Every structure is written in structure tokens, then in C-alpha cells.
Length: 173
Image 1: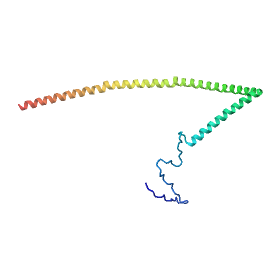
Image 2: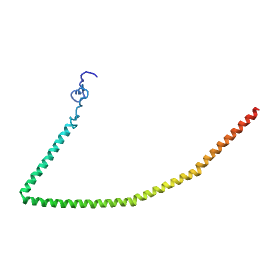
Image 3: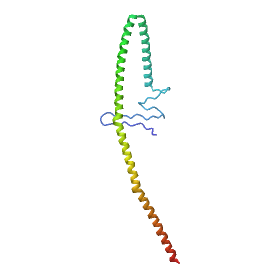
Image 4: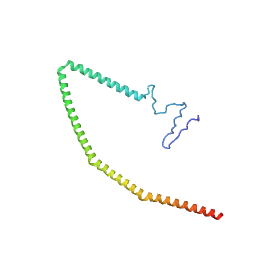
């Protein structure tokens, strides 16, 4: 590792730029990267976690204050109750519509499976049976005769070899 100082570089359009000095410590953090703290969170994650906890705590405190306000003002409580009931009714309408749409989509899926996927599967099964029949036909009418022919040729060659070796024996005598 060199201990020379980095030389300024120019790009031709502006002042000289000095590159950053190399880290001299092993394991030193690279610039622009955040290192995890002791708990395994980066500082950015820790800040977001604290912020989310604070917002949740403020919401709970607000709900408690709102509840105390409603207990002390029954007229306001009845208005808020009515608004809440209307909101729940609207929510039930939306959920009902979503269920109807879900049932329609389910019916469309069942229709797709019955009328489009089943014929494709049947055609695939028919093709498979055709391929199976072709394979059996080729095996019986092409492969078996060739194997038998090779067996006859091998037997004939052994006979010729035996006869020729017998001829050599009689010539020596």
C-alpha cells in the first residue's frame, strides 16, 4: 500500500479535483454508507422508528382526550355516534359490493376452467395417446426387426468365423 499523497486531477473544464485519501484503518466505513448502531439499526432507521412511535403515542393520547370530551358532552357524543353509524353503513355497502365483484370473478374463473382449460387438457391427453401409439408402432415395426437382423448378422458372422477357423485347422493337417 502506497503512502503517497493523491495528486490533483483536472477534467479540463474546471479547477483541479483532489481524490479522497484512501482509508488507512482496516474496516473503516466508506463515505455515503451508514453503519448499523449497537442495536443493529442504522441512524436513519432508528429516527424513523422513534418518529413512528411518537405518532402512535400522540394518536392514542388524542383518542383518550376525545373519549373524555365525549363523556363530558353527551349531545356531541350522539352526533359523533350518528356519524360513526353512517360511516359503518357506507363501509358495509362497499364490502358488499366487493363481495359481489369477488363472486362474479369466481364464476368467471370456474367458467374458464370448464370451457377452456378442460378442452386443452383433453387435446393434450389425445396427443399423448397418439405419441404413445406411434412409439409402440415404431418399436414393433422398425426397432424389433433391426434388432433381429443384427442378431442374425452376428450369428452368421460367428458361423463364418467358425467355418473359417475349421478350414485353417484342416489346412495345417
